[in-house]
Length: 484
RNA sequence: GGCGCUAUCGUCUAGGGGUUAGGACGUGAGAUUCUCAAUCUCAAAACACGGGUUCGAUUCCCGUUAGCGCUACCA
Image 1 (cartoon, helix red, strand yellow):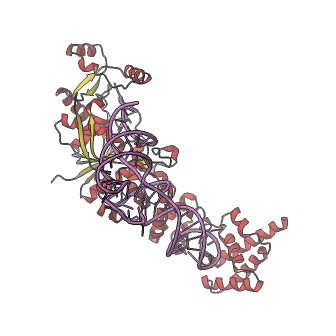
Image 2 (cartoon, rainbow, N blue to C red):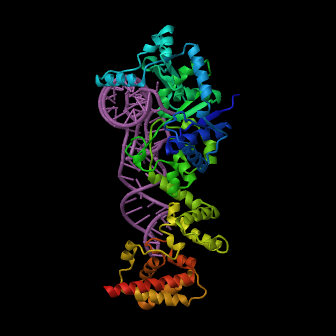
Image 3 (cartoon, helix red, strand yellow):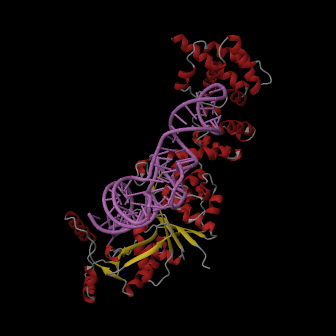
């Protein structure tokens, strides 16, 4: 009867990274699959590390991925009174107590223990303080944090939707801090209070919180509240099996966007990192995933982020992209590369789309259009040295390309077929292999060793540009030959 | 160190008491060919180790090892 409510709760201490994005995605899919509500919450209780501008960046990345939220974003920084209220409730019922120990003395105690290879946890000395001790310390102006009182014996267990039964002895837990001495709530207080108030039914988050869960369950119990279901997700690792971090290169969602990755490709790739759809289908849209998503398909072991597979998936999506959408994406690329010519936006839109259609089957990412395919959108391009070395070796090429330019200038109508007929006739006449002319022309027309079929390139570029570029290359070759 | 979790090709994974251990990415070979990609065909590639349980374990149990996580007045 209870509607399903889930949340994604990033903290604005960095950009949205791929691990967070996957957590958001699974929450989103779970909500959509069950017709539930997906809530976005910003956990910005760490005033020192939280940066407001990162909130905007995170929201943008979510939108870009297509993960729209139904409620929020809620900000923890705006709910401080509520946390203090809950803290007070816990203190009143004896589940929490003030701690006057300074962070400095605690740090020293911890270090001493570590040096002696002793396990250490807070010794609860402040729990033993009498009312009068507390009153005295307060009168002295000693600041205090509020600690949760973990039950002495026994253990707390729960049934994780992914990992199964998890149990932790209370002796392993220390009396953790709920409220810092400056009155700011800690993560544990924030999450529990929010998940409670927001009526979250399923907490789906990274497995790094697995060991935190018993603490939170203890808090739910202390508050007499209903405990939500938990589902922890295996972590995403770098190629060295270490937790993904900056030194692995791009980890932020935005960085992949900048590299020319399509959001649907990234989403699909991330979905498969730790989840297997029925039938093991690889390419799925958000809608298809929604239809079959289930926590049962989630894996228990960490997954390595494989850039190669992402690149492959991106090319699959790029090839399937409807032309108008691809065209507008390429337009943005060209604009930011300073290659956009406004004329294309109106009269020559069709011409523009023809070029994109020609390039589309080979594109691996959006950047290809402004990099290796630059010659299709600008007359200013360089001859790739590797390409020239590979296909411009033959000294006869200067004359051959010049002849080709001359011949092609007379072809009418000029199209794929007529251009091919013309080139092959010339090759035969000169007694050279067509490939020599073809590959030589490829470098002349595109500057690259790799490009679509040369006759399609010619037809797409048009007669004037084709002739001009062949002529230019012939002169370039002749000049360089002269220099020996 | 303590506690927790995990363990199938290089990577993502399917499977599960008896299978030629399946798929995808990547890799290699071939076909095609004007380059490259795509496409098609083929190939190499895995049950971490040791004990049990069992007629039979990759699968179930225990241990070892390894990896990861937690062990903060970070989240």
